[in-house]
Length: 413
Image 1 (spheres, rainbow, N blue to C red):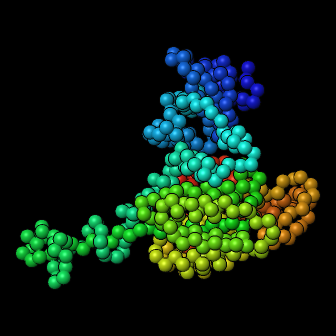
Image 2: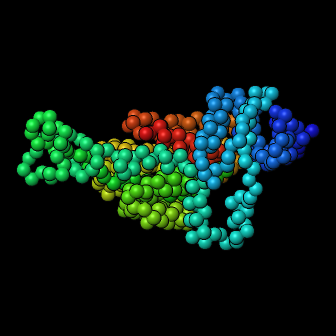
Image 3: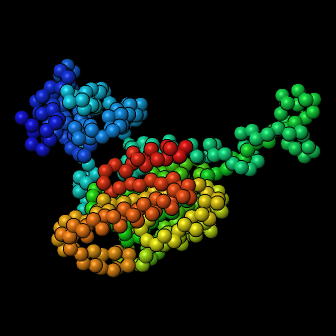
């Protein structure tokens, strides 16, 4: 008989999988599948079994992604990553993973245990950095291809990568003589190297009231903070610098580029500000881009993190930024912004302007018009970004945001 809460389609409690693993109890269940505690019958050792949902099994490419997850995790040697011991297939064709069983508490339990007033800043920073290490944000590997030593400068100067060889001229450093070419030509030649240059990453972060909205697993601001910390964690390494421009609230910030720990602390300070409680007017991404373009003089990378809600006043400013920088756009959405539920009369509030409107969500035509208008608005944003050649990623407050973020960055290499 199936354990209560353990959906049909998965092996039931007491059932033996592949003649090796006896299912003991459900540990967790989500949209992608379920995880159960089990016993390896030969080794008499506890393990965790991760099963794919039968519904997800029908999604094209889902099995390949599931297996790829196992392969990727098995190749990471870290105390912070659960080990994968084995894989298999259930009779219905769904794959499963055999993993190390870890016993502990989740973050919400930790916060409850350490005090209802919240974690002190040093402890919170420690936990954030621990989680980043645990996730091994593929983000780190993806962005590191753009960090110092990997960044190809357009200028000649001190460096290690050869740009050209030219005849020696009076005043040239004799240490740069290219002896092989000199021997072949009979004329002294010197090396001209590409200049190695510190890479500056600018994070243009939306902190408007609309980012506090969230009806799924988290707020849009939470996803944006995760993306920002992921970028900042690697953009401040090896002498590279992170600059921050926030916009959308009553106190927008422009933090100059800083390397190392100071750059990351500046980011954490920006993320730690209290959310705006009063309407501040429509968000202007265009003004934020003008600010970033005015202070970001050195060529680098600009990462836009926003819900892109507000006037489309940013096309021309974005064009100007693109003249000098590479730009990535990360859009944060909440599922409820795209459709209205049928829950009767509602008062809808625009958190940025304070405007309110009463709607009757029992009206099917109203819900259809809302969904169509919301889809058209999002299509308009995507159309502008595509026309400008800006890579565009959409992340949701529902489900996993880290994996698509890492894949997105990987495709930019």
